[in-house]
Each structure stands twice: as C-alpha cells, then as structure tokens.
Amino acid sequence: MKCDNCDVIVEDSLINCPLCKTKISDKNNYENGFYPSYNKFNILRLRYNLFILSASLTCIVSTILNIFIFNNTFWSLLIIGTSFYIWFFINHTIHSNSSLGERVFCNFLVVSIILFISDKIIGTGSLSLDYIIPILVIGILFSINMIVFIYKFKWKDYFVYHIIFSLICISSFIYYLFLETSITWAWLIAIYFSILSLLFMSVRFYKKLKIEIQKRLHI
Image (cartoon, rainbow, N blue to C red; front, side, top):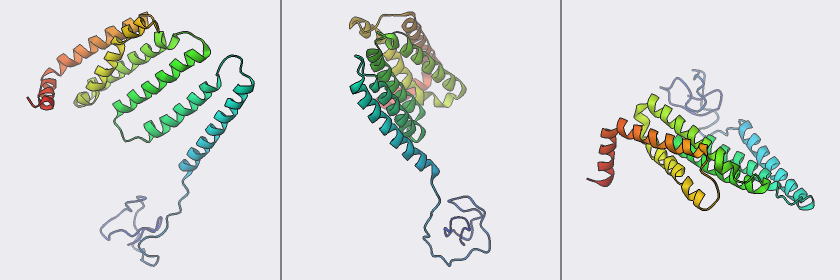
C-alpha cells in the first residue's frame, strides 16, 4: 500500500506510515512508483540558514565598524563570540546525539572561554574567573547530583563529569598562582561542594564503583 500523505510505499501489514505516521488507507495504490519525491518544505532548515546568513553579516559589519570606531576596545569580538556560541548551541547541543553530560561540559567550556575573552576586552579584570565560572560549576554540580539522586541508574554516565568539574574547582589554585584570579568565596564554595558531593557519590555507589573500576582495569 501507499501513504496518501508522503507517497511512500509501505508493507500491507502496517497500519501507520513509518515516515509521517499517517494512518494508511485501503484506497492506496502503486501508481506513482516506489521512490516518489518528497517535497515537504523544511521550515527549520530555512530558519537555520537565515540565522547563519544574518549572523555572518552581523559579524562582518561589526568588525568593519570596530576598525573605524576603535575606542581602544575590540568590542566586535563580543558579537562574534555570541554568534559563535548560538551556532555551537544549535549544532552541538540541540541537534547533537552525544550524552547530556558531554553536551553540558562542552557548553561550559565554550561559555568559560567566551567569558574570559570578554573580561579581557571589556576590562573587567577577572570577574568571570573569580565569580561567574565558579557559580556555573556549582550549578552544574548541583544539577548532576539531582539527576543522580532521582535517576540512580544514571550515576555512571555522570560520575566522570563530576570528577572533571571537581578537578576544575581544585585547579583554581593554579589560576591563583598565575595571578589570573583570586581564591574568592565562590571558588571556596565550589571546591567544598564538589569534594563533598564527590565523596557522597563514592560512598553511595561504592560497590558499583568498585565493580566498574575492576572491569575497566581488568582486575
């Protein structure tokens, strides 16, 4: 039989079309062949292309204006960075097949880099490293803990990322040594919260974690 909506040939045993989920009618026939053209207008693709075009034009115009209106700041980089992040979020978060933990980590990494560059451009010192980034880490760790608490079977998917964010917190001392930041109350809370929650997860899933380590190390 054939689907009335998209003209795809389907098996006689199927009730709904596997492509568009439309109910198959008994009046379908095979007049138009097995591989008809599918001409449904893709509005999402059009919106994406329009965004790419408008973002590219905005970046070019802002760069040209920045050359003529310099004012000792590269403010056009902020517009370029924001446009890049929106593109990254659409392609590598919304339309990504990677795990949720990987998407969260990649977004955190990109946002942190953009914030760091913004500090240098605007001249706000180390505001992002001192406060914004550690607050983001606290929020992400809290979200991971809530997900693991509600969906206990997902602990293995997020445990590695929990360790990564804990190492990021501890590495704030390295930032301090290079005089890029100071150990602010935000970093202290992030370090304390990350170590405490990591210990809690290790104790909570001790047996499963032990088995997983033995499997990984072939012990």
